[in-house]
Length: 602
Image (cartoon, rainbow, N blue to C red; front, side, top):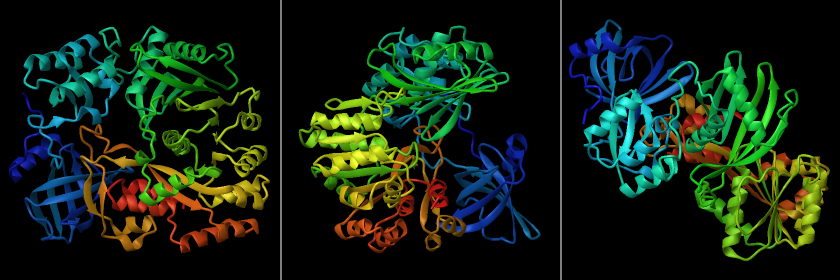
């Protein structure tokens, strides 16, 4: 099989030729050089760069960089940071300045000839997968899953099949690299992507292959867009109109990714199609609307629930679609990132028969997901009558009654909650405690023998008490009902296959309010075939748990404020969200750039 990896540079002459041929001059880029788990150079200027290496210049560091040395280099460029392992290929001293060139090396070491790809762990890029017809993919047992550095990586059963390479390169119009995969896993993934027959999905035009995608049929456009987002494991689809058409973006692991552009005519048809599916008024274009629908893909086993919101803008109606998961098998406390002590505390509450547990955090921080995981545990351990009130229903779980709030306010949280208490529930879940009426009913339910689970928008666990009292709930009622408050955030999880270890710099340690941790080993994202070159794969939760002990509850009833409660929490060793984030940073689970986001709001 043809190998497309760049040939390594073996001496300074070849290095100079390589620099002349493929590297571009850059300005404003800087780098930190690490060698043997220590900072060798804290600030080096990048003079030129390419996909395969870089040329650097430093002053007054003669003798610190040796030719053929293996280093870790962290480069900051245009508000973007990336880390690579590299080999020093040449060193040149010019007075007080030292110039040297590095070639990036593959620290992961996956070889297509010997590595058996774990098909279940790869992340499928729909731009690659849907470029080829389903009948060819199913017949030849091939699945293109990622385009990296101009090479499309394909998992298949026979990596020596040169005829397949020829067919794929003609269809994809790019060189391909074949990876071997387990036959059973590959068959399962092919059915998930293409369905059980060649008619399951059609090949999509490649986003980015031209300035505008031309698709005549709005029905196909909408179906293909939903399917691409489903494959990419996106949580949201953003369709944003502009002067020349509309931009389509997906939110994946909390980050927005550009997907494609569509022209104005197709955008207009697509908006009408989506509004019809969501039972919205297609004639109303000057007022925001909300709706939802359930979409069944051609292969009958796959379905996605979609929440749709429209917003009038200068160039047309903006559409945002939230894809709500229908698979709940992975919704367990073990998968959410709880430390053993935190998990034990939540499980201890769930084994009670009454009391109030509130999840807090901003929108999109995973509060409802954690509550569903708690409900799954309750269903597995004992026979209970569970009723939920949600806006909207995000997951469907067998064995519980789920009630959705009506946008016309025929069914509000407070009305539904009062009615639910007449249905003999053991456990009540409230999607969001929004007002005094809902809070009052929830607390009274917790005091009269029910277990109540709810969510609230606050920044910390201790702020839960302040928020409830600000709503008008009496402090003594909060103290009597509230047993556990959990603050939650989400951080991206580093890919375990390609993360790169390096020391934490002094400036980074200060930025996360932990100056004493300078020099500790942390990990940076890099990018490989498993994470699609992103360096991250999935997200993990951060938690701060406040268990309202008897003496603390008495203080809350007496009117003690949030600040005094925070002092007690820290004195007793209860970790904050930032403490949990730092622990996960030192454990190699996430990166310092993710932790900085938590530290900046602390």
